[in-house]
Image (cartoon, rainbow, N blue to C red; front, top):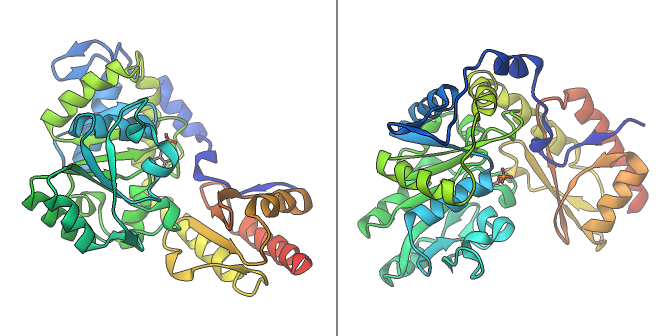
Length: 347
Ligand SMILES: *Cc1c(COP(=O)(O)O)cnc(C)c1O
């Protein structure tokens, strides 16, 4: 039985055309300054392209989303400063370094959220306390089943924060998925936030890389911190070429992944012993809650052994399935069949 691997959209491989784009990309030393930009022309061009896509002044290429998020947190506010974040946002739950005293020591101010949106009263109270220097958002919201936060909700948070002169950072690792699900441009979707991190290494199929987007002043400061954190690269044009290719050619195909996630979720509706929150299936992520009492680690291990289907651990009750380029409609049908056999056997 062939393997079907739905653990993550980071499993996408670059296409031949994407790799070919490297061959004709001019490169230089991106760690040497030429005005506001480094000397690698492909990096510089792609950063400007990214900034334009988001309607912001400037952008900065970074090796990973984690580095991009950390860099933004460090650029916005100093150590000990309060950062409003929700308990299950990626930067708090999976990255941690921004909030760890041994590393970057920003203070997490946890505010509850429902379906990806902060509860406004506790958010307001946190802002009033005067301790908060940054408010964090995530879109699409990984640990909320890939939900897309609508622009109106972002604006509601932003309007309140800006009354208190507090900036907003958006972890937009999958912002292009959110925008596709909401049928608006990333520019429109992010117009109320002050900085954005997005990944090209996930559903957009590039092998490596993320960008940080914001004002000239913000990106200038972030560039200095990037160097200090070891995120400054040399001929990064070889990576930026694939990022540019991804932004030009891979964004428009994301709805295909979303349709596959829907197809998958629909197919799991009458599998016994599991539950899928259909309302949360808005992008390329399907979370399955295991209701039999079995721990999800053992559940997913058996699923792999018995059905050669790989999924990702989220918490003791939940696993995640992600669709991406390379996973076809037939793969999804096959995955559904295997899950039906598997859950019937275990219920
Ligand atoms: C993947 C991801 C990141 C981090 O990106 P890496 O490139 O893996 O470091 C940040 N936020 C969210 C929501 C993610 O899904």
